[in-house]
Length: 137
Image (cartoon, rainbow, N blue to C red; front, top):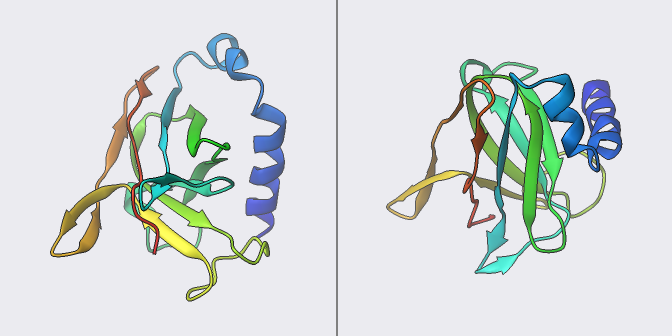
């Protein structure tokens, strides 16, 4: 849990420093998109990057961001790899995911009314766009 707090603190510091990535870590990429629910942008959603091979481990979080007032997000300093992208609307502001209270969504495709998470692959220096999450449950 402490790692999530540290990550959130780092996000606040890095939020306005997109140019720093180009100078410090040109080999790293970005992932960006929009989070909506019922076609409405959702503000203040935590967008989480989860390592492909560790989704069931204790510490799958690789990076994160928060949506702005238009539901847009951009995750900076992304290591080349494959990830799942999840979005959590922390309704009770306790910085924990609480099923039944908080809303959860995944980047993926819909099959029979269920969202199946899709992997997002980032290559060295690549800016991946259009990673939109359209349903929060």
